[in-house]
Image (cartoon, rainbow, N blue to C red; front, side):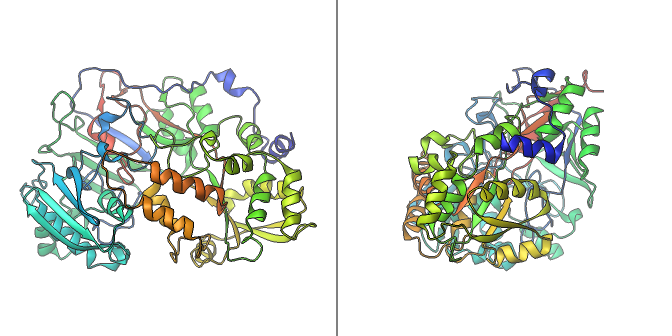
Length: 555
């Protein structure tokens, strides 16, 4: 009740029972089998470019390159709603091993403790553009491309502890590398994240910084780029892939990514049909869109990124697990779900697996030590603080950015009830990031993500700048990750990672606070689509190869 009163006074925008009034459905609208229609263009709205740079050795993200350049591993779209329905692809995570068959590689196997062999899909060609002129992509291209990535520190690849130390082409369509040490987390980050460059392009131009010189091997080719405004892609007519019936993809003639930073402008463009697909619309905006434009399809309310409380355990106070547990026991998590978000939120204890992933664990799957801290027990919180030497509480500072200021106010209010005097320090972005990566924030509130174990686990690498809790001596955690990262079976996924996650969450180095749910929207003329966002960690827009436009419905 306390949180509901607080949130109403803070926002003055909630409408009790509104969801019932507008009749929002949580049911996913999946695509129905029908004959594909070739041709046509779609427009997808984004808030940013999703990445920077056109040369992969300098790129700070690859989402904008994905339609043009394939990664080694890429999930099979037809393991989702358009086919077997094993995944939903609502989140940018790396899919289970056996489902990654539609990238440069169709399968992989381990031939040694730190050696991975990839078998390539045959028929993949470089785009029919000089100087590549449509020649086949081979394992020799992979050797050259990854060796080039290793030469550039900015790529991040040579800084990895378990970086590749040797690479070779067994034959034209079999590629193998050996890592510096057994760490499949590294292998499966590299093969999902990085893209290779064509040798002839680099030999001719020296780099691929100019988008006009970009030659790829993916389902689309780059047509036009206007920085901060739009990226236009057109169909690659020589693309190798087919759908489940053997029909060549892509079906679209092309698509455009429009960069629209203002939320209200983006929602208006969706309502008027100027935008065909919009992802991750916050639920408060989504209910208004559904009310005003019920013909636009949507996923319904889906759990999204939580908000994370992070403790630096090198701090004398927060090094004590009893203090960290006490601060979480003081929070009424279900009140945040019900009162702050009208039920449009969810308790997700860990970012390692997103809902819909086969290895995702609901709260009840965690040990009692975890389930307890997601309860609400201020009296036990006070007892733990007393046991830790703080019977009268202590003073502290919660560091955050403006976007999370509302959450910070709620948390500080809860902590006040158990005797803690925590002040909020809203920081400018540059100063915040500098101190965050300098590990100089004892207590902080930040945005979370649901990006999968191989991405999330990097945060807990000893000595890494992104180890925001600055964990140095939890050998049990390091040992559990060591086991998880040496996984060998392409058909299995999750058991070792789940064991590491259960222990990690129980230690409360960080704690996931329920965040606002999101909706994915698409126009009724977008067919064979069910709200997919990515076919891998960086494979945004990968779904564009398999969807089509019903031109009889499009305005």
